[in-house]
Length: 106
Image 1 (cartoon, rainbow, N blue to C red):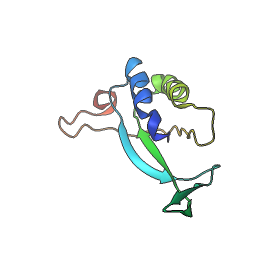
Image 2 (image 1 turned 45 degrees about the vertical axis):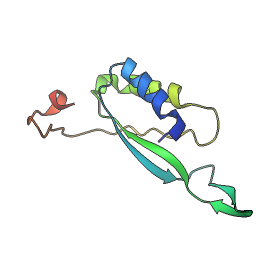
Image 3 (image 1 turned 120 degrees about the vertical axis):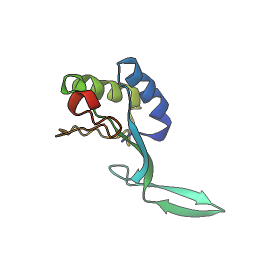
Image 4 (image 1 turned 90 degrees about the vertical axis):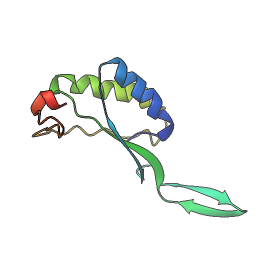
């Protein structure tokens, strides 16, 4: 997950290293920052969930470290809420249109 205003910067950085696609989902969550307060029509409200952007990127294992490093550099503000990166193994990939599998489908 990253801060929404960092999405374009992260996308550009990933494109530069050869990432050809990603899925983006607008989500809400909380972590160390535990939300915040906002004032609306003179009243203060607790906002328990903070807007985030979830990126899903599937890449060859040989590029995984470079992708993580690129996202980390591009998304970092140095403030609480910069996000987290989870690296998972993908057992199988199939391109629906062509039936390609494995690395050919990425």
